[in-house]
Image (cartoon, rainbow, N blue to C red; front, side, top):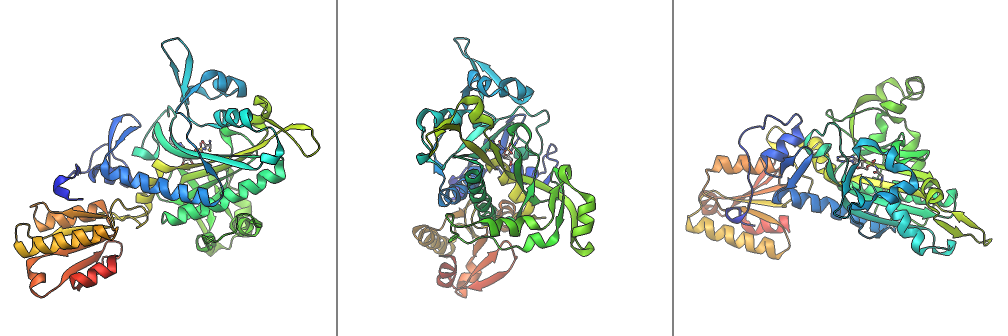
Length: 438
Ligand SMILES: Nc1ncnc2c1ncn2[C@@H]1O[C@H](COS(=O)(=O)NC(=O)[C@@H](N)CS)[C@@H](O)[C@H]1O
């Protein structure tokens, strides 16, 4: 993409309304624009990151055997009356009336709807287990939307729903999602810690929150530092095998949010030098809630004995839009964002130090063409901004690599390659730079 033809409304100043670094940097780097409280437009640069995160989540959900579909954002109120949550959900629910005075709502989550879909088609245990998921916008009329996309009112969530014949089966589904979440957040360049959690409005009695450590996080957390060094299962993990050793490894070490923290146990189990009390951002949460929805909504299957029984369910959410902010909270410096390669909007920022200079233009065009042809995403700053402005802009938007081309360097046959995360700069030939980046 040539910057002269892109749409990247960066800001020079820190916007007053931004209280945390991710909100500030997302506004300054032209990634989002607030359209209403807690409701954002995803501008081109931010939208590319959102799509990259969604794709990584998709790949890991598919690997774990979940099946993708797409449910609507609008739901019938009557559906939620069946589960009893229509009234219970409270003021967070955005209730809507259509032209025929029909009562609808903008979905905050989809347990009821997926249960309705499931019960319409599945009648026998032979079709179990099944895990259906989608990535869809949700609305929760938060009392105090804040911190930009971190706590929005309209936000993007991947939500998955598993159905099993009994609790034993449902725990296997739960364990598959637990492992898939370890892989998702690792691929996003994050250290997310699974912590036992309260179940809240979703229900059930088993839940883990996945939390990334960040000073500005809304959740107070207490952990055994060793949990930060646990190995994440590889892409060859056998989802049909016994995952309990992995679950045990990740749940044996102490890790709890403040609402379930047991100070006495923490002191007893965790040696002083390994105790960490800090804050974190909840980027995902998984739940086992048994027959809570299937009982109320008569989602039943006939078992091996021919007897009908309500299925056992679980739901598994990832805050896809929250993760854009969460990754920035975990990966930035004073100059701006530092995108992990897997989610960066572009892999390379190509900087032409002297637009209009025949040699520099020719070298940049050739590098741009070759990188693009090799499938490397490039943002080519072909504007006539001053060099200093170009460098600070590239640091702000946080692309993993900066490839700098100028007439002087070219005279001695070199270009400069800078790694945004380490700050390391090397001079090398254009060909060597191409080899390094492709
Ligand atoms: N207001 C919000 N703004 C941005 N992300 C949010 C918001 N509320 C929740 N999330 C994200 O969505 C994830 C899942 O939300 S949740 O309430 O925990 N779980 C569910 O809704 C279940 N239905 C799981 S499918 C959270 O872990 C969080 O990362």
